[in-house]
Image (cartoon, rainbow, N blue to C red; front, side, top):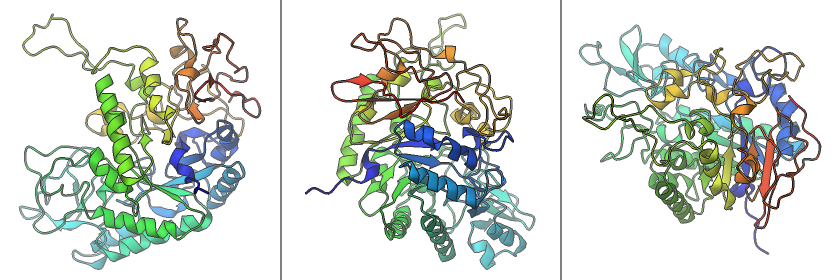
Length: 520
């Protein structure tokens, strides 16, 4: 009898941005009790697992990715008891729980970094991080390395040394060549595995290993850029996607594999597709986010090439391919693929010459491009990481609850700053919180009228995103005739509800859940 495939090979994983998903106590901020109260709705959608963004103790300089204590829950989100209740409820509903781990850096408020600041240069406390003397007597940073969020990747401390931060200054990078760093992180993995989590997503997995041999090498005037990708470097990039990182990931896998039933490990690795497949070799992580689909041009040839290469490389390591269209770091693809970029003109043309959109391929065509980009999910076995795909992003956010350091980042990051984590669009009035009070958090002002099915289309939003497994959509749904000419079976969908869609090779349909979903 053949061995059944692991659950994650064709799972639908629902990302929950905890801070804005559901508010359980009426303070205007999403929290773990709010998530617990809504888990039955996610289970009704047919999702297999939820992925929680960081909920650990943090000063929130970068939306919780600056972790001060990775073994406790920030009071903003609840308590450890609240997490245990969430985990138990999820398992009762048949949902697995994947949590975010941040191995590359800590918060500047972490006890280790506070010890390092209080210790002198060259001390054991500083050896856990990357402290170096500056150039020109300490007046200049040790290298020309740049932060992903903009500016130098080095911050000067009062005694004249500099510490490395590839992201915000509040996120000092750990030195993974130090044995205490690895030992502490593996203990943290065991802490959460002992509580019963079903897997981990490793943030910036390709950035942990760094070339710290002296003298540190500069990037050079033509290579200095604020990028999270290190492709095309002869001899390897100083800190992105280095060979040494794979030994660290094998250690993570060994720790996780000591637990039964099997848990899943997922890499966020911004590397070239050929390099990214190395992260999913049999003794490394189970999956890696495939960002090539996210960054591919809106062009049939480019999309086909990305899909073909992704499938071929997945087969080479035996891993299941994954498809990423958006996450909390980028603009929702309903907006990204609909809204044209700033118009450009051909070089040398007059100011009055007709402009052209810099968006590759066909022009904006309503919700069709983001719907069409969901088509790879129709071909299992794949693993799909989903968000509320049809929610457009509101360009400005009246509150700061969703703002992160990405808001100040060069390029696309600034455009993605606030809308990625906002609530679901739909009604003009905000939904009630789980406590029954109005939600005072970031209101996604996109109204349901912004993305209804067009009358000329024979089907609604659901049919264009049908998959061989249930897939989540938070599109404002208007029941329309399906391809057979009969009304879509979706009277239970309200303006504030999610909707789930599924298909078989012969049918596309909108299934009724176990019970009606209420308006939130």
